[in-house]
Image (cartoon, rainbow, N blue to C red):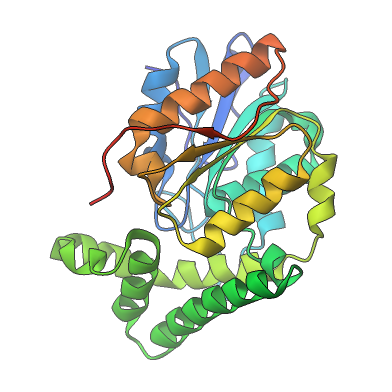
Amino acid sequence: MPDRDRTPIRPLGADCRPAIPVAALHGSAASGRQWDGLAAHLGAEIRFVAPDLPGYGGSAAWPADNCASLQAKADRVSALLVACGRPVHLVGHSAGGAVAVKIALGRPELVASLTLIEPVLFHQLGGAGRGEKMLMQEVALLAGIINASVADGNPALGMAHFVNFWNGKGYWASLPAGKRIRLAAQCGQIVNDFAAAFAEDWPLAAASELAMPVQLIMGLQSPLASLRVTEMLAETIDNARLMVVPDAGHMAPFTHASIVNPMIARHVRLAEAGQALAAPVTTAAGGQRAA
């Protein structure tokens, strides 16, 4: 089993150097354990790192007066990447994808390749056309409901809206009571995640500066706001590869790991070999629809 390190600021050590380094960043209300299946799929020749982002898993929460900006998160993860001693193949899902983009833009020398699974860079919608602005309003409404729920002392209500937005109506009610309690306890961190996303202001054109091989993955059953952000990045980044999983939603790394993990592994393998990755949109059929 590949090595793992879920502590965002602990150096990896010299044992990272002989192996191919891959770092994977999880989404909101998850942890580095999200990537256990990917670690197993990649194999023992990979030095795999899956840190718990601030406020999740075994990582300490940020101070109440600090919304944990994307830059602050990127700085912590970058400390891990620097310790590898060579560029790392970086993977990010959802909020973790937004952090991964921030690292790739600010510290491109640390990133050998980039795989982004629906990064929640929602600020890009606000600077686009009328349709995108309407999608941005939908996301802002969700964030407002979550903020109000936390302020009113009812985080379970906010988390219910959050979970149903990403997984479909009624999904929250289908979860075991214990899991709903654990998720509700993370609602305050969801508030911080939205605040960090909305605080970004870099223009979409900046993504055109990403010169490393980039793969974007999206599930067609995801909310339109998430799909549009992913499409916008694919349209902007030269030679980016956009992979589509028709029956999957935003949680494709969980529900369709048997499709997503091979996509990531292939991208890493081709990038490591220095092969050209440019390709039109590719549709990956198969897999089961998320429950």
